[in-house]
Image (cartoon, rainbow over all chains, first blue to last red; front, top):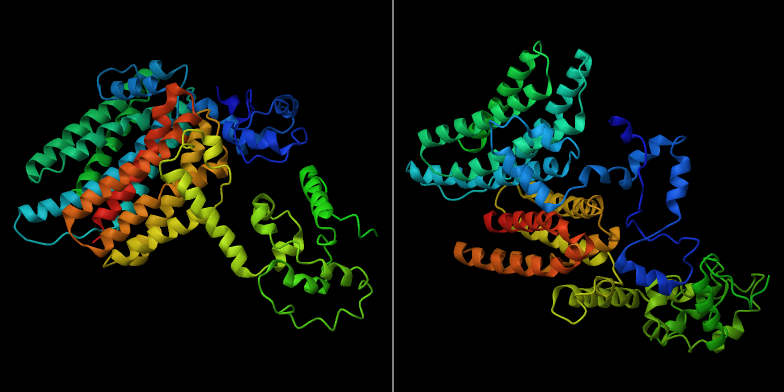
Amino acid sequence: MDDSYTGLPTSHLLGSVPAATNDANNTAKQEGDRGRGYHTLDNPPETFEEQPANNWRGVFSISSYTQYFNVDTDVVIFRLISSFNPYGGDFFSKIDANPDLYGLIWISTTLVFVLAALGNLATYLMQKHTGTSTSWSFDVGYMNVAACAVYGYAIVVPLAYYFFLQYMGSNASLIRFWCMWGYSLSIFIISSFLLLIPVEALRWLIIILAGVASASFVALNLKSYIEGNELSVAIVAAFLLQIALAVFIKVWFFA
Amino acid sequence: MSHSDTIPLHPSSQSDIDEIENLINASPATVLPARPPSPPRAQIPVSSSLPPPPPKPAPPKPQPHSFPPPLPPPSSSVPAPPPLPSSRPEIAASGFGPAPNTLTEPVWDTVKRDLSRIVSNLKLVVFPNPYREDPGKALRDWDLWGPFFFIVFLGLTLSWSASVKKSEVFAVAFGLLAAGAVILTLNVLLLGGHIIFFQSLSLLGYCLFPLDVGALICMLKDNVILKVVVVCVTLAWSSWAAYPFMSSAVNPRRKALALYPVFLMYVSVGFLIIAID
């Protein structure tokens, strides 16, 4: 599956800066094209013949990544809803034909923003609730920590699992791992809203429930992906890592 | 060397040659070969409204130059170009036009031209007008000065409003907006949409104008309810401004996928505006 990293698929070339192409010499056509985008038709043959020789160039061209974003709104929503169900275990079969990175990127970005914003709000509410009447203060540092934590977790953990599984011999697909871990973070977005309630015991209850749901989503899907039994350590580790993320979120942002 | 046959700056660009030739025919001697040395001084009175001809002290020096012949005659017919910057905005705007005019015009003319372009782009993007629905027309003459000013202004306003960690606030706001604009554009491209990269950056920057106004109001009046109301209104305005462009750029089945990140970015900026105390 991963040879497609290196090749350039059919590139209906997309709107980069409208360079002065050799064939479009009259400005009228170019100005008309500015709105429509940039439909060049003579580039695909060139890319195809270059493909075997200069594969590394695909890294810098947008068209080689569009295959990972080939989803429609309803597909994304379907995957999102199925990520709320911790006991399905069949997420990988749902994304098998068409894994997407859209979920990973935007769910983690939303989570960063939600943690930073609601974390500040929750800290303020908690302080007001316990009587120490502090005025509102916004700590921008939350944004930093949230970004590092969420992006770091969402990118590094699947990468580590990919390398580990490759080392163990079983066949792993990095994009599918990224996709699955990305969608598993969606539960935390909802629970962040619930964590605003300034009752400490309730907060712990909520985060434990969310953590367990998310972690079992990850673990069950991983288990169904890796058929072998000797890697159950890895599955338990994945479960525990997700729980650790949940606890970290509670402790740092919603103290 | 043929002086009558102007050496265009970009010989590969046919249209510019046409324009330059038209200029030559219209006003014969204004378009000089782009000679780097100071002789073009003689043309300074050309495009400006300044009566005193040589603001530059060089005039006596060029005499010993070997190329004086073409210069004195042009200076006589020099008054022709002044309408140039305003009558041919495309040339002046692209900077490809007769080099001496845009290089030697007074700074105020350049600044005025850029400012008027910013204002006209703003009117096209942010305020209701009949061309909004047509993305090709709306921001045809995009530029990046406007977005730059708006982003920096928003960062500065937020930084001034903050009582602690001012520089971190500015960094977060600036980084969020600048990186956000680039990522949003890449998002549309990755989803298979058709937009032009810099045009989209320009549009997202211009759509920040309402949030700038909101941030200014929030900085001056520090009442929470007022802040929430102002930010909601300006947020809705910004989203309304960005909507037609973004939604027409992608496949209709992916419209929400392209619009959601725009909304997320504006909401996070709005939240920063409300929350910064």
